[in-house]
Length: 278
Image (tube, rainbow, N blue to C red; front, side, top):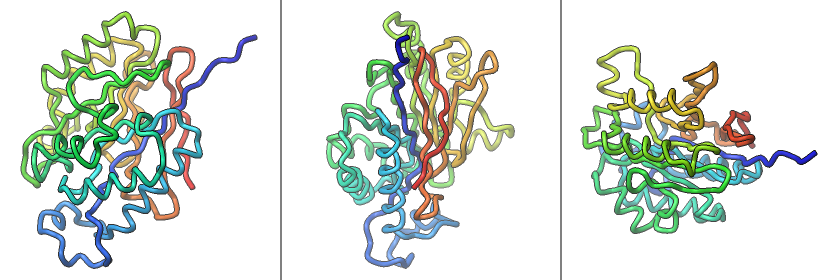
């Protein structure tokens, strides 16, 4: 009897990298950084260490591919992206095995920050990162659709937006016969489902998310991996099966206890495979 080939995916999210600083003090950080970091220590070394440990845990899990689903930095400043790139480089993982997408925090400094980062410190990771809608990162048994759902907004808002053109690009890929027999995985920062309270949805939710939820319900091989909520999510979409999965926030980890979500691709489907740590 032939063994089923399994492809493992590791899912990391919400790193919130800070610019490197020698001190644990909050002094010296901008008002914007301090505002969006309310409730979290402004400790650049600790955040970098958490990310290092999460990448190491993903490597130990023998993951074939690693997804980092947004809020890579605290406000999307050049220094924060440079610190992120340094930590990724030090992990010694083939950049083609890592898919990065931006979150709302990565666009607070500028809507051009992500484009700048991919042309600069994150250039090695650009080929498998979110760039244009409809881009496919093909890994044989599974294909990823990394999406940039950031939008221009003040620090007081944390929403995302799936544009009509991006949704149409996802639908075109889902309809493509080349992807019918294997999982097609959308990677975006915001979850596709709405908050229960309309006002909070406007502040923090994904505009256009209903379109993606409809697609997840229509295509049995279409899945979504997201972050943003900072906790584990298994959203049942069709036939009693989860098709949208959220990962815990690395920034909220204890320094010696990374939490990396795992999924296995087998028999043409994607299934949750637990959480691995130190």
